[in-house]
Image (cartoon, rainbow, N blue to C red; front, side, top):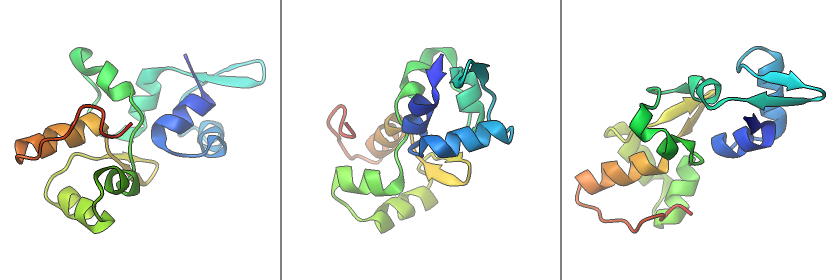
Length: 122
């Protein structure tokens, strides 16, 4: 089970945002005492994207990246990342915020001939 802080880190959002979404019913959670606990399937259900298949579960547990984080890690402009998104870079929409799974970014760029080092986003 994940904490609110774990989910906030995964989505790149603040813990208060996750708590607010839980209270409003935007994400399922179990309340234990004064804290909430969440399961990965409930977290992924909030992402506007395909549910991870059994073989890809671990890759979808990595923290998602915003456009700015991708641009910073690859030393490119945010406009370039936005262009890639328009060209088909897979995204996951989380409560209205555009996020990308780092493995999806790596796979998509490799298909276009860009070779990235393992864990470039870390």
